Image (cartoon, rainbow, N blue to C red; front, side):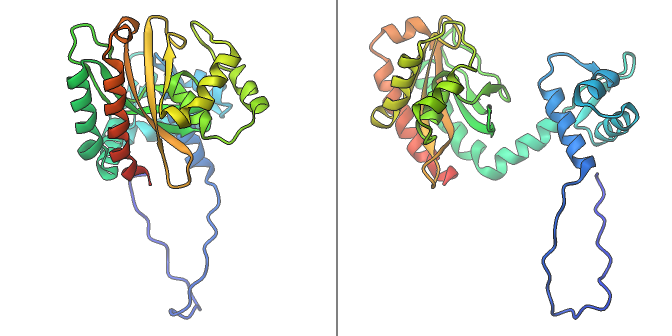
Length: 269
């Protein structure tokens, strides 16, 4: 890592010929990515033995990989405790990715405008894995007691309001959705019938609402951002204390959020 090594010239081949290269998985790369994902889910630094045990990696190999990641700046180590955590280099990579995809230039101003106008926090969540979403952009509301959305937070893919939006475009039948629903964790669990009704109504309403199910006292509204294939890999979501939704303000916010998502959708085509 960190050094580009050019392939040696192929001997005996006509330079005008091309051939298909077969790229095979690299165990070292797989270990490094696995360690980064593991550390991303840890709230506290961990030692090499715990990492090796949890990921079933030979300790000496795990230590070698960790040291390489520390050298690249994407993992940090406390020299006193010899414990590891994600390094600031991850933020640099993430910020560059967001710039390249236009999120900072296009999405962030949209979120900032909505958060300021309606006084609540707005975030963009994207599909990270089959089972997870990650917060890739966020703007805090202007109200004194607005809810903070942490950039980089990982959420279950089918939970909360965003999960309802993703489920609505998944082409899964009721039985498949029920199996997924039974794996979800809630602070105030909805019934499956209620959750399924929410999921099925997303296409007609254009949004979904989680009224304190995911987190008690918080109401989360999400608008899906479909891609060119019609599936949903991203959502824009608002987060507010549930009392905010008792006013006449939510519908104007939802209309604004849907309009913003229509503009943002161009990035996900």
